Image (cartoon, rainbow, N blue to C red):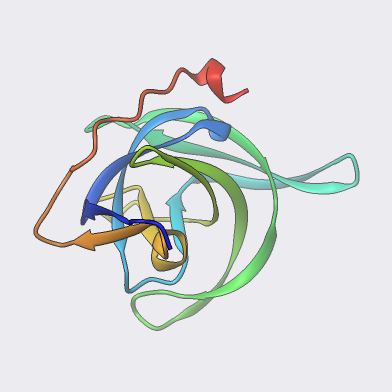
Length: 150
C-alpha cells in the first residue's frame, strides 16, 4: 500500500470532465458514496445510451452555473442522513485532488441546503487519503485549464 495523503475535513477539487476547475467539497468518512448538488437534472438518449444533463453551481458565494453532460452510470438507492432511501442517478467522473487523479462514482442530488455543493464519501477516499477533522484546505487549489481535460 502506498503512503496516504492526509486531508482536512474540507478541501477543493476539480472535476475536469465536467468542466469544473475548482469546487469546495466536504470529506465525509461516514458517507459511503459521493454526492454532487445539481440543478435542472434531465435524462436523454444519445447513441443508444442514457445521458444526463444538469447544472452545477460553482463559486464561493454567488453560484456560477456550469452546464454539464455525462453518461449515466446507473440509478441506485441511497440512504440520506435522515435515514430515508431515494433513487439517484450516478455518473463516473475524474477527480483531481491532493495531486492525484482518480475516477469516482458520484450521485446527483439536491444539496442546496448544505454548506458544500459536493460530498466526497469513503469509497472515493479509501486507500488514497486520510482525513484529519482538525484540518481544512490542506491542498492548493487544483490547477486546471478546462482545455486540459479534453
